[in-house]
Amino acid sequence: MEKLHELYGRQDIERLETKYRRAKRIAALLGGAALLLCVLFCCLTDRRNAALMERLTVGASVLGGWLLIYLRVNTIADLRHEITHAKMLLEEERTAVEGVLSVSRERMRIRGSIRFYALTLTDGEERRRGMVIASRAELLRAKEGERLRLYLANGYAAAWEEL
Image 1 (cartoon, one colour):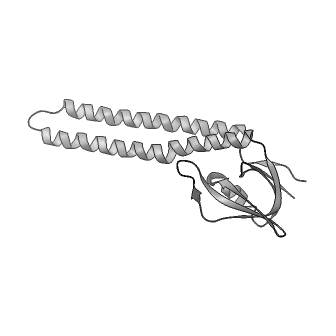
Image 2 (cartoon, rainbow, N blue to C red):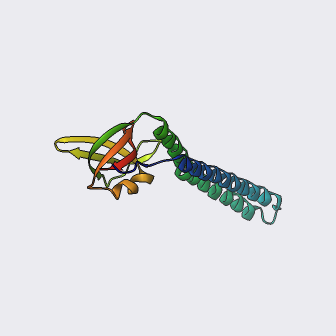
Image 3 (cartoon, helix red, strand yellow):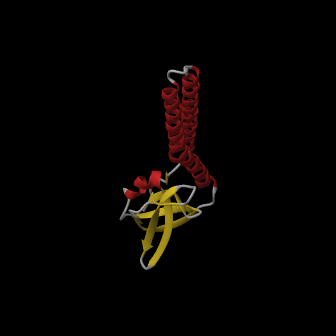
């Protein structure tokens, strides 16, 4: 029996939480910079350059807003969902499943939640299905075609052992 390989450990959760806090700070700085630019452009406005300053203010607010929305949707929310998922994998009860592993090539997403890939473990005629979060799929994809004991928590891969 080989060593148990965890997909997430406490250090991974701490690393994800650090990235999450850093992304939130960057978003706050970006929003503050966009707001300060708008205030600066308003303060520099007089009769001669009002049209230009209006365009600059609108441009700074729109660009800053788009960047904040992109950062919020594609980084901050994804990190928050992954942290929640990783904590669930560490705390939930696990079931062991054995078989030859295959990982789908198509990435799926639960709306408003994590991205994942489907797993299939085949043991003779018996097939068991599970899921692995997209950021950890490459770890299991390297083991594709091998016989493994996979530990599932609520249907998600939490750890594996080589047989």
